[in-house]
Every structure is written in C-alpha cells, then in structure tokens.
Length: 241
Ligand code: FPP
Image (cartoon, rainbow, N blue to C red):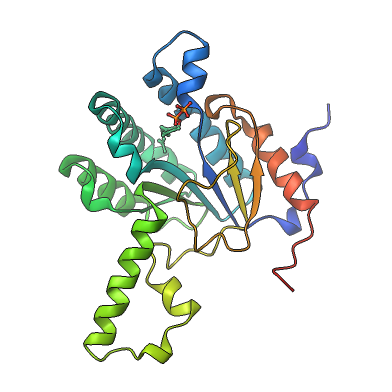
C-alpha cells in the first residue's frame, strides 16, 4: 500500500505546522467514556504527530493544547487537563532529548498553577540545546490576549521614547508576540470537522494554508498528518502576489 509519506516531496516541506487538536470529548463520548478519557487518548496522537514531524523533517510543530477560553471549563476538567499536560511533558522529556526535540511554550504562562509552571520551565530548560524539531505548546494561549499584550508593550516603548509611532510596522508587531522567534505557520490543521480558527495565531496565519479534517484528535495518526502535508503540497501559494 503506498502511503502519503512516500508521496511527499521532501524538498518542499512546510517549515512550520500548527494544529488545533479538537474532538477529544466527542471521541470519548461516542465510545461511552468521559471527556478525560478522550484527552488521555489525545496524548497518543500528540506523540504520533511529534514523531511524524521529526521523522520527515518539519522544523516547527505548534499544538494548541489549552486556550485561555479553556479556563472556563468545569474545574474538574481543567484540573485533569492541566495534570495530564504537565505529567506528559515531564514523562516525555527523556524521549524528547533522545530525539533531539526542543520544547517551547507560548501563551499567558503566568496563569498556570505554580507547580505546573515550574515543571514546564524545567522541561524547556532541559531540552533547550536540542537542534531538531521545535515542539511549541500553546498553553493558556489566545491570539487576542497575545495581540493585546503586544499593543500594551509597544505603547510603553513609545511612551518612554524608545520607539516612534512611524517605526511601528509588521516586523515590530511580530517581534512583540510570544512567537517572536518562530516563523509563521505554513500549514494549519484542525481536526474534528470544525471550520474555524478559534483565536489561534490570528496575526501569524495571514498567509497560512488551512486544512480541515473530520477525524477526531485521538484518531489522528501519522498517515493523517502526512496526508495533510501532501494536500498542502498540491496547492499553489501566492502570498497575495
Ligand atoms: C480538544 O478537544 C482538546 C483539548 C482542549 C486539549 C488537548 C490536550 C491534549 C491532547 C492532551 C495532551 C497534550 C499534550 C501537548 C501533552 P475538546 O475537549 O475540545 O473536544 P470536543 O470538541 O469534542 O469537546
């Protein structure tokens, strides 16, 4: 059976792929389990996708793991999700190192519980010298939060005389976002059939190719990921030109 992986042109890979991992709850419900079971199985897909991205040579993989809106879910789900996220990160750190993967995080990390934040920072530190895939977790992230924050910081620099209003351009704005060291995504994948962006990387996705699939996140496997890359490569990107 020929796979999508074999059909991919390795010389034209998307450098940065961002994913909205959706459908954990629905996947679990369809099987008669509670939502947490869906999140637990979502971890397998995180592992599969990270491995697939590293194997093929994608440079940046950003996963929308927790949005600022997710803080409004029932406390029991928030707690379970936080615990799962942080435990997974901690447990997988040796594997990340073995595979030369560097962990990064974007978002309002000040809202994470103290112990979660410490563990996250420890893992980031322990993998910071790795030169392979950069795995970027969007945690307590929302694009409007990020842009608002950037506007505040730019205003402060104007007020204290370090920046003039005329100097403000695309690059200045990009450099004030939490993604300032990360190139804009070339491809955004959203699972589970929802056709929207949900406050994710709004500035950064100006020219990103969007790919939607009905597959729920826990059922998203390596081949699903490769299929999305293959689909991306069939498109012509003109960047408005
Ligand atoms: C969306 O499904 C998923 C999330 C809000 C959380 C994603 C988290 C994981 C996959 C856990 C592990 C992640 C890492 C990075 C270790 P949903 O709950 O919105 O599903 P629904 O739309 O069917 O309700």
